[in-house]
Image: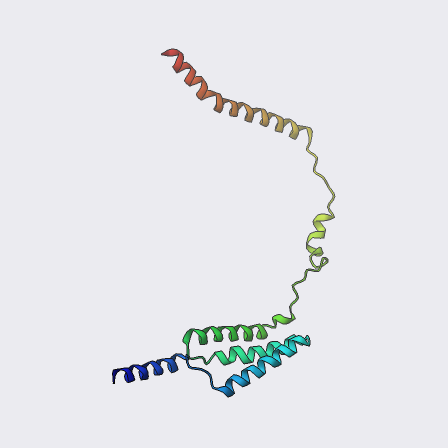
Length: 153
């Protein structure tokens, strides 16, 4: 008696989880649509084949008894519908070389080169000498302090 109850509970679980085998006519219809989609792909009619595969696969999987499979299929169908709604098939991502000329041409056409005056060159040279003296002081001051300490001992 216990074995019969266990088998009945197991069978109910399999049916609820969608683990039972598909009926032959559903399987035959799916195989027929799949074969039709492959034939269209072989002929180079990719949009028609895509439509058949989308309808046959994802829209059928939306009603799958497994919650995760159904949810993923709904997400994919939503993505395809959004793609159609936003008309992304009409968008081209190739870059035309002349598309951005109006933004960058004005900078490229400016052929002026800045030349510093004599006063600016002299000021830069003085600033460079001062910076070199400060850097030498920062490096040599600890050495001098350490040497004075060592000699004083």
